[in-house]
Length: 353
Image 1: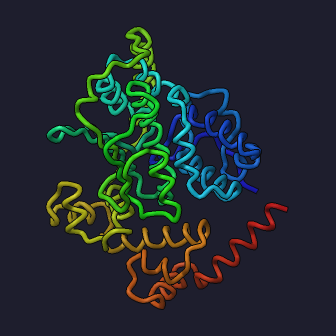
Image 2: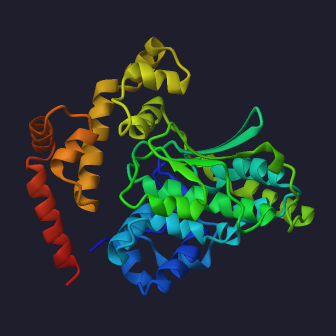
């Protein structure tokens, strides 16, 4: 049985405000799923429902989403969870957006305060010619379960934008870093636009002409209260990520589209290759070692949480031969990938009895 924790105090743990939990409970309740079981299996203390501003482990929350996706058999769980996610359920961050004067100010304010809402994370807004790009990134390389997180996050921002632009408004494009899932047509239905996968970033792209549209719930007094409250919490000040952690995160981001190479990762981080190598060495790491660690963590995650074939998984993890992947996995865990999956499913079945 898992020990229930409400807050992970490890200094490197990525946290998110517990306000996300109430919307999650409402969503799974509509699917006839009991939240108590999900909380226990994902090590979330249900007491967080009474304190929406307290930080909880993002990893635990994403685990709860993965478990719910399995139970409900909703393959695109994060997508549809985000699609119906009311901005108010974001708590302080949502009210900062909704109470801003214009859509542009809402997105800038939310991007500025997002690291306080969810540590180890960034939201960036860029103007390129007549388009605006809203980009979301997770900087914690230890979190390999990212698809539901990215789809949920972009969905919540889309709902904020639709408050100003109308419930049927659609962006020009939506980009996701992860590979195209089996039921990818649902993404275009949810966003009402072209959705591209295996892209450099998770992003919503829209016309710059929408930037100045007024927010219907603009309230400068409420905005000030929400901003001051978030300033006192300062979740991001509790987390300091290392170069090695940033490199791990970049490897997770690119591995499904390209073989991660130090030159490419250095470019994404804006560093010369030799500088990145030197900084990793100073922290006691090598790029090759971090690459192997990411492969190991991704292999374990997908064997436990998907039905992907072992040969396909080997290909996704950039092994030229399935036998090379099997050899590496056996070296890591002293058991073959096939046997690991069998043991995990057997233990999971026993836990549910």
